[in-house]
Image (cartoon, rainbow, N blue to C red):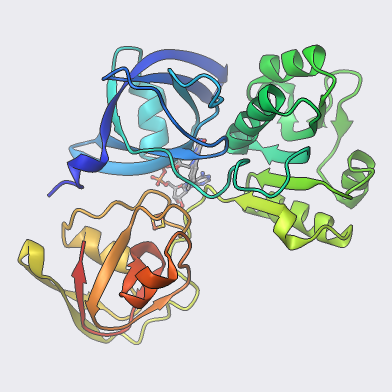
Length: 340
Ligand SMILES: Cc1cc2nc3c(=O)[nH]c(=O)nc-3n(C[C@H](O)[C@H](O)[C@H](O)COP(=O)(O)OP(=O)(O)OC[C@H]3O[C@@H](n4cnc5c(N)ncnc54)[C@H](O)[C@@H]3O)c2cc1C
Ligand code: FES
């Protein structure tokens, strides 16, 4: 059983640029030539066939919505990763990948103010941040951007040339490279700690912060911003890493029945399993793009039964009342009847 094909449109890879030894940027156009409409910071969920299995993964768009004829994603290798490594090893211009419509709440357009912006990223977390920066520079004549990027050394700076180009061409874009081994004058040395944060962020009043990177990096940035008095509603973060199961997922070992009447399936599941894992094991066509309760791709409706929900992001109040849940963020606690 495959995921709902109507949700996907064919995208043709039009280019590939090696960014670092383990990261590449891929550009795409829509096979039907339609323009892309998205908000800077959003992602696309791709369907990728790896060893006869259709897998779904989210990739933030690193391109700017100002150029709607194409989109770009920047993929970094993940040790043991199925899809990231497959894309880096096999995806070339001319290949086709099915992609969903852009989505995501981590974006520059849905924020109350984006005239003064702090963008903190590390690793592949640069992707939504550079999209936001590109879009603001093109649309906010009075904007001020502090772009902070952390890496071990200069060779691991993703999109290094583009960051330098933006900094050289536009005084509204202030680049701060935080490197374990500084490579040139102006590079800041070390890990991002409170002292370095305070050195870069001299003033927080009126600023909006976006951060994307490893979990510990984002936790530190958020902590430093809170300590400086930034209100929570002006701090936005995006996690790329799937939560394996929600924290409440301890299992009693009890077994339950999961029914999906539309697909004629009834399978035995275990207390404490996530609904997403259970549906995937049953071969149901659920799409688990982020596996961490942020993208909404795994939305399904509970017709009967109980789960413990750790995230309801992207669901409306009406949907929650109607029994909709995010399968990746739902721990099974009883017999269930689900609708996809
Ligand atoms: C909203 C969103 C946007 C994203 N944007 C990007 C992007 O712009 N560029 C990009 O390269 N990736 C991005 N990702 C991550 C991407 O979706 C995949 O998770 C990643 O490519 C790994 O998938 P995989 O199939 O290779 O690894 P899997 O086979 O799924 O996982 C292999 C192992 O790696 C761990 N793992 C999975 N993802 C990560 C990760 N990101 N970092 C460290 N460990 C991980 C898993 O827990 C597992 O142990 C994004 C994720 C989300 C949710
Ligand atoms: S897979 Fe993204 S919210 Fe569940």
